[in-house]
Image (cartoon, helix red, strand yellow):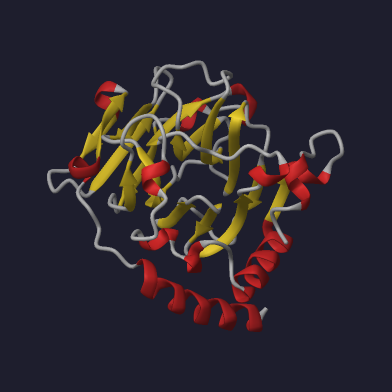
Length: 278
């Protein structure tokens, strides 16, 4: 374990020099989406609270749609312990209010309850069903942590505090679809029966967000072809795949902390399962 800690620190220092940005103002990048007075942003514009009680939750979305980028947010999930609530940060190609069962592209971070389990999912022009869940190595309700999604024409990469935990590769040459539509960003809190039972005696539940800027290419029209240029740093060869050290780090964290993988069962396994982690 001591080796893992030392290796992780060295790796994070190296990666952070490429991705360090200054915390951004909410109103520059995002706007209120739903929730009425359950949504609030502080006067400085650098901190948002989303509140959930028995009546409803809240959410926000990006002002623009994007065709590639390195997206991130810092989040702190509700401290009060319960199941059944879902705290999110994700990219979504579906229009607002579209039935989520309709085929679309989407990349998710979803915290299921407040016990420290985060579920990632990829909707690949379908209904998703590519869940991979992790019991995190920290308590996400005690402090802010960085949740990041890299999306370019080569891969989708999920990182938590700069540690890669999941990759979905572009395997269109092998007949597997790959996201090719403009996407917007959303953050939200809500409740769902499939996520467990809510202990409403603990409400209200408050999710907190900060650090709102990101690196991305605004989409021009209905496709993302204009956002594949290597003039954007996240499209350069260094971001086409994990390097050897990143692959080892991801394998270690997946082995220790992944609690569910759709690829592990023949009934849920999909063709890309043999291709994404090699």
